[in-house]
Amino acid sequence: MDFAISEKMQVIIGMMREFVEKELIPLEPEFLRKEFRDLLPELEEKRRMVKQMELWAPNHPKEFGGMGLDLVEHGLVSEVLGRSPLGHYVFGCQAPDAGNIEILHKYGTEAQKAQYLAPLVEGKIRSCFSMTEVDMPGSNPVMMDTTAVKDGEDYVINGQKWYSTAADGSAFAIVMAVTNPEEAPHLRASMIIVPTDTPGFNLVRNISVMGHAGSDYFSHAEILYQSCRVPQKNLLGPEGWGFVIAQERLGPGRIHHCMRWIGICQRSLEMMCRRAVQRVIAMDGKTLATRQIIQSWVAESAAEIQAARLMTLHAAWKIENLGAKEARDDISLIKFYVADVLQKVIDRALQVHGGLGMTDDTIIAFFYRHERAARIYDGADEVHKMSVAKRIMKRA
Image (cartoon, rainbow, N blue to C red; front, side):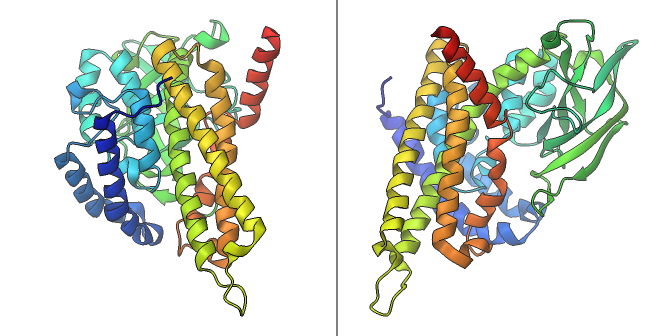
């Protein structure tokens, strides 16, 4: 792997970092106090500025208005944007839209691309991904209760989903539902596009996550599909390929997440260091930075972040050059390793901040609340560990 960053990418990353520091981080106190939807006018202005700088939609296809960066390049971008919870949204590469754009680009019909993909890349609409179910194990996505039954030229969808991120305000959902119950487990489900104004699409609630239900893009919805009827032309890709497409979506998606987490880690470490050198803890003026335990936390965090970063960039390079199948072990390894580093670094930063770290006077408590889920979504850490361990031992 070549670790060199092109001059073009250095310029792009520098411009993005400056924008995040000057335009987005100052918005965070307001972001922590207000509902997300109340911030939308300000965020739309920031998005307009990003488009003027020609930095919009970094990982999306050029033919639809994106920058067309490859996976390694977008990993570097994601690291910078991850420094603020607003970064990816303002630059038009936020999940779950980013993953939905990837699969629409690869599997969508020309009509689907015109109706859904083009406005999604442009940021005119948002979408959600509706796969996780209330009563089914998220770590085993082939287990699914939601069904899509053919009736004439339509599918009729029934089922209950939750943790459909950003469903509130979305124009459409990509729904995973069983269409072929008699097939092998991995060929039973399909992906179907469901406009959210379709009768039978019922957003029951935005789920309260550690006391915060959120709104608009920053939310996770419970959705009830009740005889929700959509035309069969809304099928995304071949029938029964839902699991196959989901796996293709998750590989690059984990790179996006891991590099975003590394951005969070780097910012948390910087805040930890600033707090340590400024916080006086003794009458003689000594600060937290003079304590060996703090020095140990800083050193361990720096080493872990560097290891996580290089692992993730290597996995991205491997996907880009050898394919997701060859990078399967690497994808599992970074998922649980980087998530664990994330938890440790945020926790240390919070501890160094003491009581202040528990408040919303800094961004650390937000990171602590919302990034705990990193060890659960996109496959629980334990599942990744078991899967990769079995493959390694099989080769031995």
